[in-house]
Amino acid sequence: MKILTKIVVGWKIGKGNKASQRGDHDRAFTFYRSAIGKASGSGYAAGEILARLALVTELEETGAPGELSVPELERLVALSRTTDRVPMLGRTARIRMEALEALVGCAVESGDRSVEGERRAALAEAAEELGERGPWIDALRGLGTFWAADDAPRSAACFERALEVCALVADKAREAEVLGAWSVAAMEQGDHDRAGELAERSMELQRRTGTRAAVGTSFARFDDSARRAVVRAKESAAEVSAPAIQVEHLLHALLQDDVGPCPAVFQALGADQAELIAAAAADRGRGDAPSPAPLPFSDATRAVLRRADRMAEQFESVLISTAHMLLALLDVIEGKSPQLLAARGIGLAELRKAVEQCSATRAD
Image 1: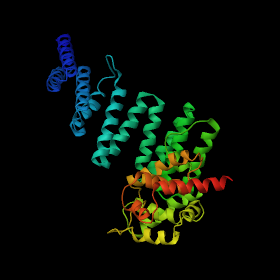
Image 2: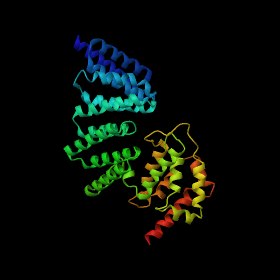
Image 3: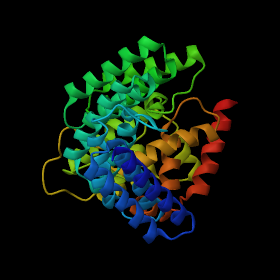
Image 4: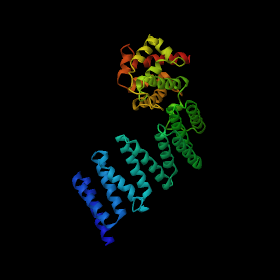
């Protein structure tokens, strides 16, 4: 009976694959679900895993909403704990990791932080069980970043454990990434001294090893003016009881730059820096309740900070300054912040030209 079940399940999965290749997705779904039912009813866990994986893949290829895959993915996670290996796919710990990664993405899309935290923790456990240190480090780093806004001690414990695993395998590139991600978390928590220390460790490690960390590097490369701007952006948001650090708060902070390149840039543009600061301050709006602690960055602000890294590269600058952040803001954001500058004749092209002029002057 067991052999017959395997034959039937395999046949149905094969028919589903052929239907999928023909673009007959409805028929493919029918075959996969039939295979799932047969395998489940017979207690054939490996066959059910194969059939559910095929069904999830089919859902993804047809562009179905992510929530339709959630029950299948959750079942895959449960099934992967009942058997160690699946023919042709290897250890089920890897299958569990892939399913959990997809489930984390679904939780992020739905905005359910409680479920996201549970799934990220399960992902780290699956990565540890798999025994591949790279995915384990990445999962711990992701968990540390997730807890940064809600539970600083728990976040720090995740980052510390990730660094321990890095040391075990001498993975310097990932160590630099963990330090960079931790520095960003510390900055968001308001611990600016710790953030600076971690950023310096990340940069020093990258210099010594010749590696370039892909995570958390933006803050690690901030110069003094850029770091002060981040602090001022938090203060600006808190002053108006904002629920998060929005782009308008970052702009208000950048315009207040008094130690970086912005004063010279505004002078080259013929702009009144004091008038710009006043206009940005008035444009911030006001929240309905006291700002939370720690105050998070909005997604738009994060996008600006990430883009600043690329702007610095375009100017062949090792460090990221307030000028690069301002260019990034105009480059990626559509809204009242660029309009405030545009109304005064400051667009991306004009700003870039002024930054180039000031950069050439400093080089001379």
